[in-house]
Structure formats: structure tokens, C-alpha cells
Amino acid sequence: MKPTRRQFLFGAGATGLAAAAAGFYTWRIEPHWLEIVRRPLPVRGLPAALAGKTLAQISDIHVGPRVDDDYVVSVFERVAALRPDIVVLTGDLVSHHDGMFEQMERVYSRFPRGRLATVGIPGNHDYGYGWSQAETAERVVAVAREIGITMLRNEIFEIAGLQIIGLDDLWAKRFAPWTAFAAFNDGRPAIALSHNPDTADLPVWDGFEGWILSGHTHGGQCKAPFLPPPLLPVRNRLYTRGEFALSGSRRLYVNRGVGHLLPVRFNVRPEVTLFELVS
Image (tube, rainbow, N blue to C red; front, side, top):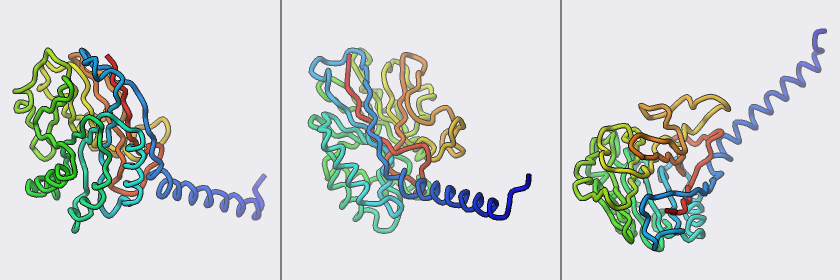
């Protein structure tokens, strides 16, 4: 039986309302609906002094014209309220734009500090247009250091016996693990920070057994149920979000990020990860 004109109009109206509601949710709700993901981070040989301590991973904040400053500050306040012992920032502090350094100074003045340490690395967007503006990255790093973030660029920073290996960005052609690993002691506990998860597949990890904490993907930002995200800025498209087992007793964790490039998210809420360090 054919639907009546009234039934047709009612169905069309309901479909339009559903589409409008979904669009509003994708645009205005989920991009700011932060999830605090709590999970253990087992570290081989973890010093007893760090057992039970917390490590907060924040990634891909993208301070700039497309991410609301008040939202970012509210994220920083939520993380600070968790009183993490260590805070790590895994790249893409900003999106390049006019006035970015003034905005960065204003927003990052509220960045949460770890009780033991606050450590970060650059991402590709911190290198400006074409990921090629070294002077832009230098200034981003300088601003971050001024407000108390220890920025690592192919360097190792030690916290109570735990080595944190901070690697520079792959797309900016500044990824130089041989420089960082020159000071690495493979007999002692370590974790690595590397913005782009594709770096986990490169043959540069000999002797490293532990976690690599990454970001970069935003989890794909939009993902239909049961389907992979249509846009994913990695060569290895398995690396969407969450935990992955790797060769050589390594594990990878890909954080979904706080910010966005386009102000839309669907089925991929922004994330801050709160790890508990365990032996």
C-alpha cells in the first residue's frame, strides 16, 4: 500500500530532524565531550618509587581558531584536578595561524603540571605550513618550555629511574631515534613518546622493550559503527586508536587527542588517558 501524502511528509520531516540532530551532535557535542580513559601501564623493571603513580597523556590539542579556548582550558582544569604525578604531551600543541604564539601563551598558561614531571614532544603541526618551518617549531618549543613543559627532541629525560625517550616528528623529517638512543640504557625501564604511530614500524627500536605513546590520528575523528574511519593520516591503517601489540616486546598506545582540525567528531570522543604505572 502506498503511503499517504501525510505519511510521506511526516517521514520526510522525521528524517530531516534526525539528520539535523546528528549534525548538531557531530559538530557541537562530541568534539567537546572529553573522555578520561583510565588504564594500567605495566613497565618492566618499574622503580618501586613509581609504582601506583599516575601518568596523564594529553595529545593533539591544536590550539588555534578551530578549537575553542574555553574547552581547552576546561580540559586542562579536569586533568589538573586528577593530580597526575607525570604529564606527557605527545605533539600538535597548536594549529598554525596568525597570532598563534600569543594565543598559545594565553591558553597554555593553564596547562596542568605533573607533581613529578611535565614532558612533551613536538608534532607535525608544530612545524607550521608543510611541516617545514623549523623556526616555528623552535618558538612553539620555547613557549612550552617557558611555562614549565620539558620539551624533548630526540632526547631522554629521567624521572625517578624511569627513562622517557622523547622523539621529534616524523613528517617534519626531524625524527632521529639514533640520537636519542645513544644515551639509552636498555637494562633500565623506559617508555617512549612519538607523535606519529607509523614510527613504531620503523627498524629503529633494537633494545627497546616497552610502551610507545602516540597521537596524531585523532582516532579518525569520525567513524561509522563497525567500519574503519574514512580518513586516517597514517600509512599503517591499523593504528587508529587504543592499544596495539608490536614485535620485540613493545606495545603502542594511540591517544585520540583533545582537539581537532575540523570541528567534527562522531563515535570518536576526544580523550585524555590516565595511566597507572604498575610493575
